[in-house]
Length: 315
Image 1 (cartoon, one colour):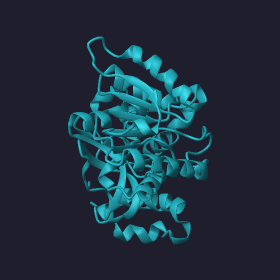
Image 2: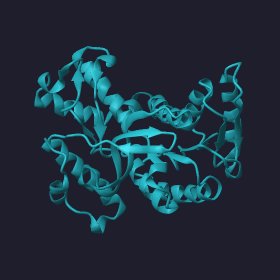
Image 3: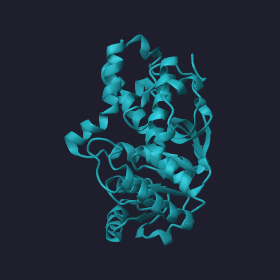
């Protein structure tokens, strides 16, 4: 069973994709239950004719036995920064965490809500669940956007871009890993100068603002990336993707959730892959961790210039 907390645009898109591909039974929970009921009525019509799954609108008491719980609820719509509703979002996540801990403590948790890395960390601390069971889904979306921007720069199809990873914060300090990305077998570093890399990085970090200006909040990219993770857990199909998880010394960083390459299976986080980064990328990753820490415990935050010496994965 898949339970989705939040029946807005993103939550309903995730539910639609999961239902249309007949992944598992889906339970929708929303602050206003009528919305969950209405979305369930609509999405139920997308279930394949030969499928045995169901989609229902319900409440927390009915999420027991969930294999996966997706948190896509939000207190409002951010306009200038993913962190602008920080205090309200943290309060909401703490309330959600109490209910999940009560009713579905054995489930795998996928965080979708922003500011994603901060809320993934807050949820972990609130529930004391093992880090393997709590995964923030966003760096895979950033990586999809990075792949698109590179394909646009080269006037190629996205399928020709390989290893286009984005790590760090799902926010203004995210780190595109140019050193690993390739067009077919050619490293993109051989095809881009510094000005072009700076422009791609800027376009990547503010991709969401372009979407919002043109059509409103982004929906479909994050829904697809979330369903990929859900499918890996439900079907036990190992998935290699960047995701926000709690670091315990990986990349020389600890006590922070941020996007890193991981392998996911039925147990949630299987392991973290440590890439060999350039010194410059490692510096940026440490700075990104520092930015996330600033929101969690600002009085204890180290400067990124101090953190960099702990980044051991350099080439």
